[in-house]
Length: 199
Image 1: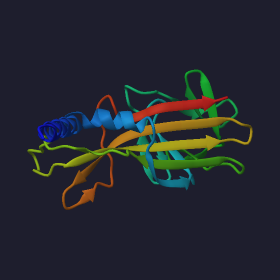
Image 2: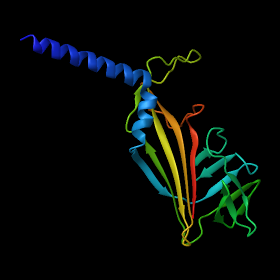
Image 3: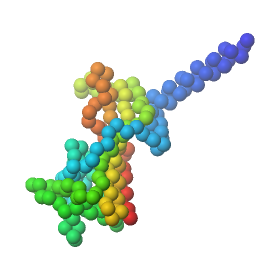
Image 4: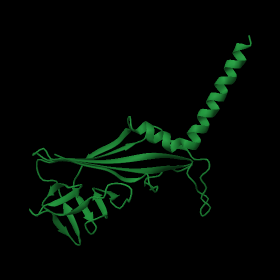
């Protein structure tokens, strides 16, 4: 008869510890789970890419998304024209040529050439985390939940050349408003996190 209260007590302590871990270390727990998989929310073909910058850093406009290349903690690719007059992205000694650029004011624009398979995929974390200790003293409007959002660009050429880029940002949930449509940055854990050019 004494076993039931002891087992119940251990279960309650375990649940309280799990809740404390989720509340205090939810971001790290979410990142750990994201290594095994995320949830796809959208995938669409790329109509155009516009590069706004000076060759290093800047912003890559993919359809209607504006994704930064300025993160100091992640990869730092360079974008410009190649010796064959192609818009290209270079990272760690490898170059991926998108195709012939179209001039748009001071920016470089590219439309995927025929035969290229180019799309952008939007995914989110499987685990959101509560943020009961986040306070915004300026507006008083603080998020009650957060989750990671992932933006993955995948571009394949008929020649076999492939480019994969991955950005990670945070998305906030506000009571009464739902999940915010934009994304937020966090020093050291968001922004461009992966660039892979092959072969």
